[in-house]
Image (tube, rainbow, N blue to C red; front, side, top):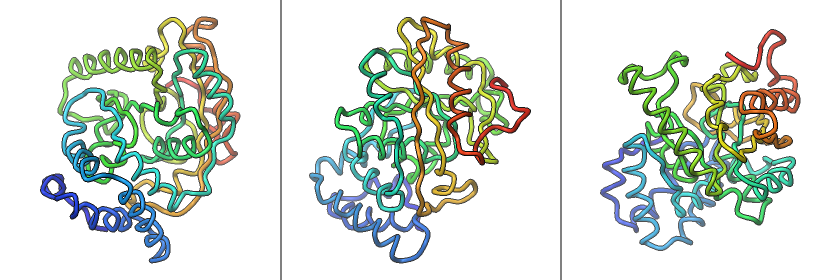
Length: 306
């Protein structure tokens, strides 16, 4: 694989982007020439559908997204490219229970709570939802994302396919950045919650990974108690999502993407007004645990809260 610097992307003309981008993304796909070639072709087809202005705008966004702790809208060009890219090696992936998500989105603000396996978790959701849903739900996805999502051009390109709210990682996470003081982390956290709530009220489907980081053993872990704040507003619904298989698409410790299939299963929406934010998210945790395949279920001694 060949990583290109942000400065390198900024210097490219649209004709150069068309020539380089498909091969560059294809170089991150493991499994031989056939699979990487399929990726290069599908991405090339998606790029061919974009205007020079759309490509140039995507490159500008690539170089600027993630600079601040803020909300970043999805870029339409990057979204089309990333969906084609994910389709090339994860095309057999599926979403189960999409009608539950459709009903919840029609009823009011939605907070999606999910287990976390890989950096590609949200773009996988975007791809499978976009494929089977005609109401534009995938375009409404917004992920609460830590700084690592924006670290490299490859990860940042994927992040542009969805809306993201950059936040500081909780001090409870061992690899949390030491560059920020506890007070700064707290201030950013408050801002992130407010931004997420505003976006949900406007129809955004905010995705929250309650464990705070990717699972190291694929099993569902406890949630960080502070996430209940995201659900603390009138009308909020918590919708649980059980995700399996993305750990094989993007294994921990590897930069390459691998061919495989993932499954997103949608649970029953929980009205926060009926049970309160803490109970709503705890109920979502139990639903996720029940929906996950055996190898992903929490260990017997694991409780919902850290």
